[in-house]
Image (cartoon, rainbow, N blue to C red; front, side, top):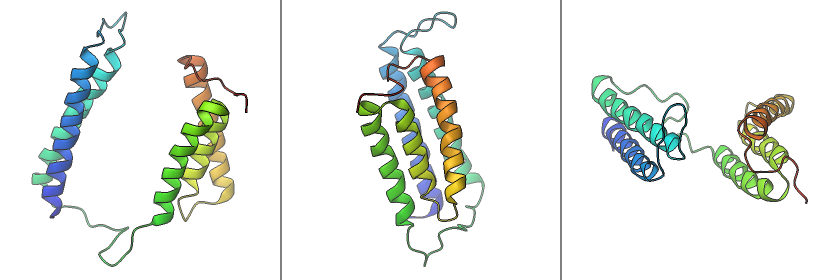
Length: 153
């Protein structure tokens, strides 16, 4: 499949998913800007996805595809990166439920960071620590997400 056709399909898929999110979110009640309903964020996110999908599809026919610098035709996929990203998501799901938000965020970011072959251990630890502090401030204290910071393991 050529690059342009793949970008057209990717843009159409993103727009379709965004439209689905808008339809589903509108069933929850959108509310107003001062008093947002539970469907406001899904509708806004879906609208953004529709716009992005249209822009991706439109830009596919305008410019030639950029050269692929990371994966040439003879380079195999980076299975370490794939494995670390999948493991990071599974760790977050498991740890958020049983160990709490703090270890879930830290483990998720750390494992995903070590998926990069150029990442150093100290850099991965610093990234995981920074994102954990930021995530706790935003989700636990700012948005008051109903996941305990530390669970009962």
